[in-house]
Image (cartoon, rainbow, N blue to C red):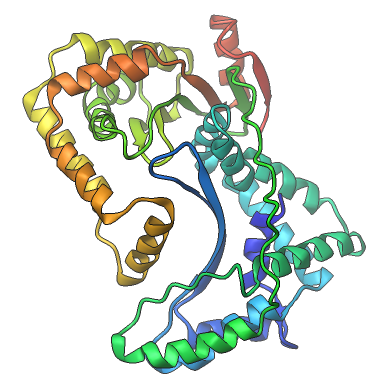
Length: 403
């Protein structure tokens, strides 16, 4: 539960005898930015995932030496003092509370996914409502009560950053490789030799699948219904991606935005984690929106598929799977792809299947995964909207609690 906090602490604290201000000056002078984040990465072919902690940054070739020295100081010589940690916690908590209107959709999506899989439950802890609750609790602690938190954060650092656990990905000019190798060898040698513990932490259990609403200080609703589907390598995955684009641009746009007044209505297929979800963004409705979701799959099955809309949905899906990326992001993504089974061969096979998706395929996957599937639902909305929805449809939510 402290990994989201550690992500900020790692890049916003002092290190190697320097305070936060001095480290921040080094970051500004010698890099194009340094970031850190805990990530959950889906496997392409099986119902499983890998957990990792990513530290990333970029710098000009002429800044390579101070850049790697800075990275070394942060991961090997991090210094966390109570006053600075208190500031980081307060800033994080304030930012989260003031951004609830923007985080509503993210929280609803993650809460729904957490009800279906262990992977979803872990993502909710790292980026969802559980993360917000942890930050709120930490914000209540005084400086003199942060000693145990600091000890746990340093334990996280020494557990994550060991020679055996480190995997380094570099995107650079070929002529720079010898210097990079020499500098990174020094970085690795600054870390302890112990490898990661062979006993992996237990994976969290999915949350209760009952329909859930969370109240927040917002005047609108974020409504999500999520279905568990299949992984990337399954032959039906490309058709689900096309179906998401097709539903979004036709039925959902018309019913949720044009008729319902929502700022946005959409469908999305997460072909990596095997989710398909229907969502509304800044929506004045709750009950009506779930009624639209009830009709969506039936509409896709019973209504003739429009050839031009299908073509646009396929083109949109092609853009989703092959986005334009900067060299550093492309290099990082390729390393993750090799780790998780999203090989070049599998990606090419996926693209070929994508171009071959037919109207019959959309009808079939709508029937198999949406009409026959048991979706879970989660809403984040203002308290008045939730109360009105419960009055109109008493069984819509079994759990109602504040965000």
